[in-house]
Image 1 (cartoon, rainbow, N blue to C red):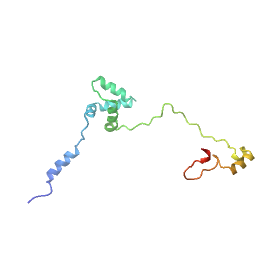
Image 2 (image 1 turned 90 degrees about the horizontal axis):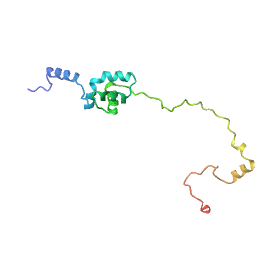
Image 3 (image 1 turned 90 degrees about the vertical axis):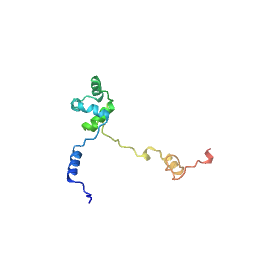
Image 4 (image 1 turned 180 degrees about the horizontal axis):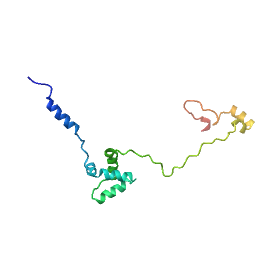
Length: 136
């Protein structure tokens, strides 16, 4: 007689362990975990990651600025802050000036010539662009 269902005692113990499970942190994150609340305070005071790294270095905790940044994002849950570029200026509103019609600015003799002879001002025909052998 084999029971396929595990006993209720085993299920209860498994549920207890599963509820208290904590994912393993990397070695560097484990070094920073005791300082989590102090790092939060420093971030609230607008300290840069490099400043926090230097403070940690003074107490012999050596981590890179990137590791500290990842720790703040993943463990502390800090949201990214979008900052304006240093050289960004306010954009002036777009203004348009009335444009002259093209036909008014071109003399009538030139208009007639443009109608007869194709040139760069005319619309290009679709397809491959083949050079005229006379112009070579």
